[in-house]
Image (cartoon, rainbow, N blue to C red; front, top):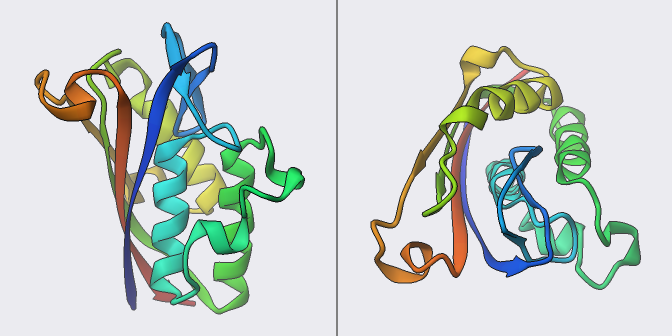
Amino acid sequence: MRIGQSTDIHRLKEGRKLILGGVEIPHTMGLDGHSDADALTHAVAEAILGALALGDLGHWFPDTDPKWEGADSLKILAEVVRMMKERGYRIGNVDSLILIEKPKMAPHIEQMRTNFARVLECDIDQVSVKATRGEKMGFVGRQEGVTAQAVVLLERI
């Protein structure tokens, strides 16, 4: 077994879509970044890379590569899953957390879990997605950005 963890942070910006866990969430601002800036999916993907001792997302999917500009982060995650399987591992479980002040995540969490289970090629009961607010403190509470965290357990196939 191998364990990986990651944190991803993106600034909120007007004129961008808010996409988390592969779900487009209605909001007045979205996450700023080279790809679709899906911080939750990035955290999960990078946690897998960490468990495999393969470095970070920036190494494999640099923001200088036009191939990944505006990319759907679930496609990035699918590529990381390919790398994981190629090395003889599968998902044991994923535990993830979104830190965002607004909007509420509860209506979207089951779709995020479904998206992850599909791409990770695992059962939905192996995927946890939770959310919490910043309680008006720090950059999350001031609605300046979003943080996502993930921990993954990989099992040898």
